[in-house]
Length: 545
Image 1 (cartoon, helix red, strand yellow):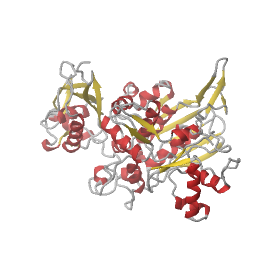
Image 2 (tube, one colour; image 1 turned 30 degrees about the vertical axis):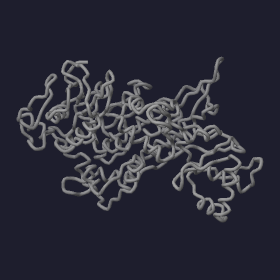
Image 3 (cartoon, helix red, strand yellow; image 1 turned 60 degrees about the horizontal axis):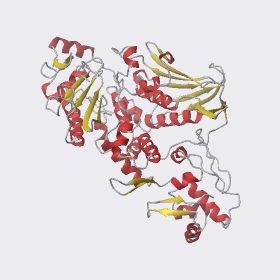
Image 4 (cartoon, helix red, strand yellow; image 1 turned 90 degrees about the horizontal axis):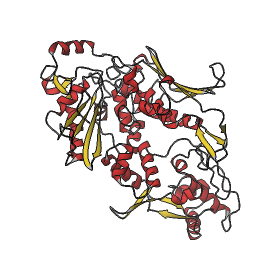
């Protein structure tokens, strides 16, 4: 690897970092800075990766104007066993960017020329400023100023973060005059933005059979609801071959998720036109308002060059682990669908994903029940469709899957597999431990214990543990040796909610809490369940029933 117009090496963190970042922000395609690699391209490593990453984020946040939050990623990598810091910088839409204390002058503005950052001529500074976008959603005043953000706060809490009293300023939810801007409006608990998923019978728009509304709430909540709906529609197809049964989803789930998130984040909301999601018998169409941003070609778009239209939304979705690193979305889609599935116009971008061929049939599901139905038997057949997820972020679910596959996996291994910082992995693992999903046995040479292992042994797959929205509405009815009807009811309640308290069970069954306690003790003595943790713990099923 050598330095190019899009790659910069630094042996260590230096005082001129802002200069290099600004040059990439002002460059048409952005670029990448590696810290811990010499100018000759030799990895030398950094001594304090976590500390340097914090310094980098703080410096870029406070020393560059206009704000570049949402336009960069700081990632920890290893080369030859050495810690390297990778800074991915997207091209910004509010050029020229400059060092805040040096203002919009030749001393403060820089541009990329070849493999170096050079001062920007004043004439070019003036030209770029004259062309600067004035109607970005961060500058548009919200038509409502009575906004609340309880949903946004809850979503941040699920990642282990808390929004403090300065969250509006930190997340750039107010304009320069101090009013709530359109970013704040989109993320507020209540707004006027409609986000719909339409479903048609056939291959055209003649016979509308569903028109589900998921908008008028925080854009984060709307995005999650759209993803849940499309996950429900993404059936598993099966084909019996001479050797084995082959399973295939209607649409590639990774590509579909990336397409939904891309459409929501990069939609042009300045004309108040929301993204559109349409399901047909033979395809899904996802349409977002706004063509490619000025200066971005189709080839650059497909190569993963990032030019975020709404950097504020990008930053928040990334905070909530709903997007990976900058520029990763389109390449992930292209792993399953070709360029021909994208259609560009001056005002819209449409992605069309064709359904899997009909040589597969719906309904013959795999043993893992990928379509989201529970097949485990607990004294009888228990059904229920998958919907809203338990309070885990996407990264936390990915980490849980990795640990289930390899209970001796290290934090560093997980970070490399997910391409995120090791410190972020540690943070997610602490959340998983605190929520009772995993336990650590031993230290460096120890291993992870999946506290749901027994639940899976009775037919609950990992996906079902993650997502169970339709509760079991009727008690276990098939006779179970030595259990009373009341104990079966209690067991049913616990299956629906492993964190349920004795008091809640008593309220649901309208019996004394002391009676519930007696039944629970009986269930524990008979080996059906046990308690993990104290007051804030959870129930663990221990027997195949």
